[in-house]
Image (tube, rainbow, N blue to C red; front, side, top):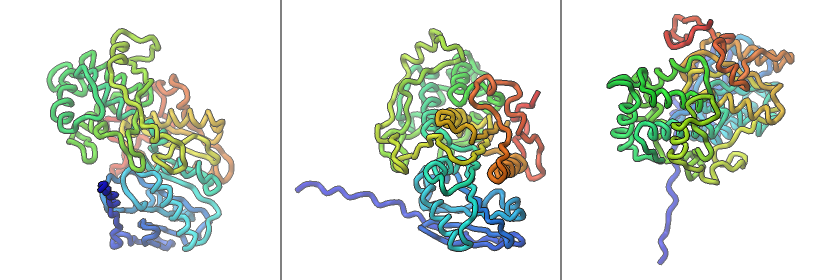
Length: 436
């Protein structure tokens, strides 16, 4: 008899409904519950201005409990008459389709509670930025503007960056490279060998490097968005014992741990990362040195599985084309190496190729954290997006299309708030490059 193959049971995601209630701000009403298998929170001011601000949260790991945030700007939104809504999504993991579908269901739920809004502004952070980018392209008639912050606006480019870091680190640090790696061997043997071969002396990693180590650092800067201020601090921070990858091997291995795995993502069986055709360099000179030639010749190459990058609506990891129809304002930390500014460079290119640059404003913020924005930076961006949507007043921004602009000493100075707030919400002290 032929073997019977049973499909694996889907994860049993759940919402703890006891965690959904929240207290409304003065002059507003709170709503919460479960809709379309996702938890939600909604807050509507008594003097609602007819505008809804939707929040898309970031990556929550692969746990089974689904949780929902309040909008981080609610203290600003409610007094100004804006309603807001947020969803847990109906699944965790890096599942963009779940975030998109759950957000659409959330808006329908809002319509049933408060009535159809006159205007919808989409906001989201990190993975929520990816969800925001997909939503405004695939449902352009639904939204009036968008504010994706620290967003994965380059979709697969993020996976490729993690691959670049892992493979180049292996090749330069050990003389060979492979993907996927054996997680145990990689963490216990390969990564310590990489560090020891790239540091100038024992204990020098990540700050005091030998020439090969400096080559690797420069390669990472170029592959993560190009020469720019605040990268030295970012390199020291993201390779320090102060940060660790969720579920990773421990402090000090954040970027190495990001390259562990087999390259698969939800809804997309097969490796999703790719470095075919990538030219690895240690500087901006297009002519390759002997060492660069050797690296490009010997580094392991892997192509993404064909089915992972097909542009099929919400299939696999949905791509962002740059074909926007509403005003979009983005914020990104120059020193973010979890979701690096490569995403803004790539998004800028895609929007330009679609002929839609007049609808995009991007702002570089000096800071090394992921989504490390001060209340003033975030609130100012929202206020200026709202004015752009309402009155057609396009705000100022930074130019991510010109590598020389990005590398300039004053890049990121115009919109960075250097205030250290009493609640600790300012940029990490000592890790933000001062402006000239």
